[in-house]
Amino acid sequence: MTESQTDQLPAQQVEAASKAFEQEFERFACFTDASRDLAGLDLDQAIAAERALAELRTRHLGKKSELAAVKKLIGRVAPADRASFGQLVQATEAALVKAIEEAEETLRQYIETERTARESIDVTLPGRRPRHGHRHPITLLRERIEDIFVALGYVIEDGREIETDFYNFTALNIPENHPARGELDTFYTTDGFALRSQTSTVQIHAMQRRGVPIRMIAPGRVFRRDTPDPTHNPMFYQVEGLCVDRGISMAHLKGTVTEFLRRMFGADTVTRFRPSYFPFTEPSAEFDFSCFKCKGSGCRICKNSGWIELGGSGMVHPNVLRAVGVDPQQYSGFAFGLGIDRMCALMYELDDIRLLFENDVRFWEQFE
Ligand SMILES: [Zn+2]
Image (cartoon, rainbow, N blue to C red; front, top):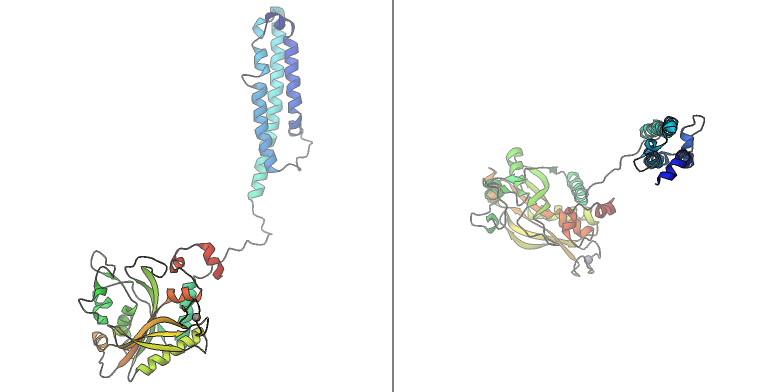
């Protein structure tokens, strides 16, 4: 800026700066006029206006503003005019500051009131319903199984998941050298306890506590060393049943399992038993039932065999009864067990059993 310009124009420069401000400030004028109604404004608009106002302040009062440039000229004005010029600059600056501060205050109050209103609770509005979850398919299936057996006169027993060697193996007639006892099959804690590898452990506890006769089922988690794949998981659910009384025979076992499967999959369900071997039962049998989907004609679920393998069963081994102080000469019983996860995967046609434990809510929602 040259000397000649400053001599000629300082007062006009102040006026120009003031005009430029007024033009820009026009849109904020509503905030300095108490008679204006701000009802049309919403919170977001007010916040945006507050920001724009701060920018306007920088532009017109900041270090690089026209007014700041003019202030530097005060010293160069002819001494006779200096005082009045100085006053003009100050008055102009004060007017700008006042206008901006009034608008800022109005906006600040408006924003605070709106925020409070937005956060306050309208007690007349209907309540927001909490989103109800629903039960896991394994739980649903377990409850169906429990209902059937309770109706057949069975009690439901629960048990611990960490067991001693006695309950997990010895009392179940699993010999010392049996591979199931090995670390390749069973999880052990560092102090020698085992994560139960079958819910049969509960039978032992229940017979010790309740004595015989007894009719019980024990649903629960069991653990085996397995690499997870579509049909295996190191943790899974079983339900095990036990009936001990005088004169219990294989016929009772077959009748009970058959009745259970009929109630589960329909009255036309056919059951078959195949001889097998388990340490804790003698004789032992695996049981299959006619495919619930194709009714025996063959489909994807039953791999075209018409049958679905479900579980193991047999007459309680005399050594198991002796382990809990029951005389096998007087009492006999049967036991059976099946995997709930596997049954669940079959019924819902899941290709991968691991889906049951992945906790993907999108997957679960379809079972609602
Ligand atoms: Zn089938």
